[in-house]
Image (cartoon, rainbow, N blue to C red):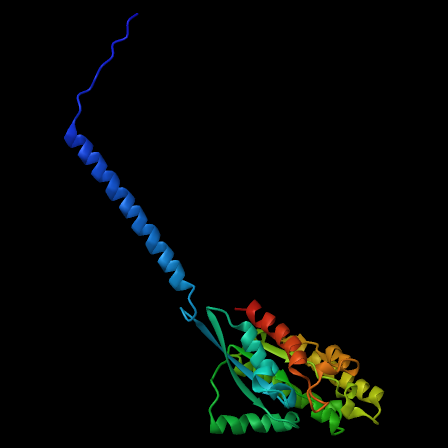
Length: 252
C-alpha cells in the first residue's frame, strides 16, 4: 500500500502570530516570577511587618540585674533572644535592689503614678522573695504577700495566667557574700520559700521556672557571679532568659 505524503503550504502570518504569542507568554512568566521573588525578599527584610509585644518584669535586684550592664539583665536578654525579623519585645521593669514583697507592691503603685502602666501586657514575670528571707521574715508572712503580687501580675497580663512566668528565688548562700554564715540554713530557708512560691504559682496556673539549682553552681564557678560576688553575672542571667524566651515564644 502506498502512503500519500502531503505538504502543507508555508503560512507566514501564522508563524508570526505564534512567535509573538510565545514571546508574550515568556515575558509574562518572567514578570510574575520576578514579582514573587521581590515580594518574598521584601517580606523578609528587617522591620517589615514587625509584631510588637509588651513585657512587664516585676522583682528586685535579680530583675534589674544589680552590677551588670542593663543589656545583660535577664528581662533584656529575654527581649534580645525573643526578637526575630518579625517579632519585637518591649520591656518595662519595676524592680529595686533590696525590695521585699510589700516594697514591690508599693513600688508598683508609685511607678504607675509617675509613668502609668499599660492596662494589659503580653507577658509578665515575677521574681521576689530573697530579701524577705534575708531579713528573717517567715514563709507564712511571705505567702499572702506573694499571692497578692501574683494576682496583680495576672491582672497586668490581661487576666491571662498563661502569660505570667514566676522564677524561683536564687540561693545567695552559694556566693562569697555568705562567707561565715550558715550556708545550709540559708539553703533550707530558700527551699522553704520556693516550695510555697511554687505551690501558689501552680494554684494560679502560671508558668514556673526553677533557677535555684543553677545559682548554686556559683559555689564552684565564679563566672556565674557579677563583680560584687553576690549577684548573678550576665552569663547566669542568660540561662534564665533562655528559658523565659522559650516560654514566651511557645504561646504566641
